[in-house]
Length: 269
Image: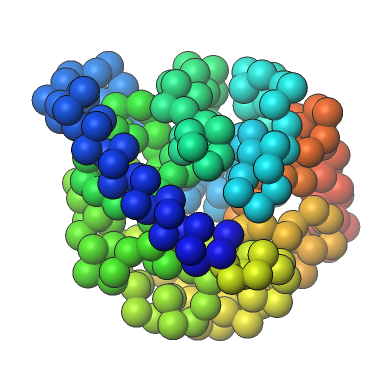
């Protein structure tokens, strides 16, 4: 999405957080059943070599694509992903721009044994408490939306809450200015924020600059098993895929097809 869209989203998110705090104070979040549950390791699930490292995303719409798929239920999608062999599931909870909701994450948690990434535009500690209360196992922090010191403090707070942290970057500058010891996973988004263009060359170019202690995942512009195998050669072990699956009538079936192709290539190689 263009930078001005990102700015719009962040401004809207500030309003949402303020309203959510007034509606549901932090002490209420801390009393939810999910808040006391131990998180499932997102990073360990992706590293599991018995699977293909697919992080399958539930995503109804986006600012760049409009409606992607509003015909299938969340239950059909996320159970389909789990049955298809996904390593983890990403659930978009942003309402205004992506058509998601907090209830989507609550519903997914009740259905799944896989780790769940809360995909949203996190700008405050309150949203991290909220993620824990909703049943998330990991959160997304977007380097383009946060100053490095703020990203650091949010990542540290997430670790205090027992959640893992995926930091998303789009270029080397974001990567090198925002890396910190509280991050578990570095995700490279192959979509250019300025013009919507997508290329896995972004992941390939940044691979060598991501320190080895961080699990590397690639996001966007991934639809073929050959692409995943190419990215694996550059050290990527996780592959976040949303639109490729969601634009199909049966996202779970599409996920299974790609999973089987990747597993076949991994066995052959």
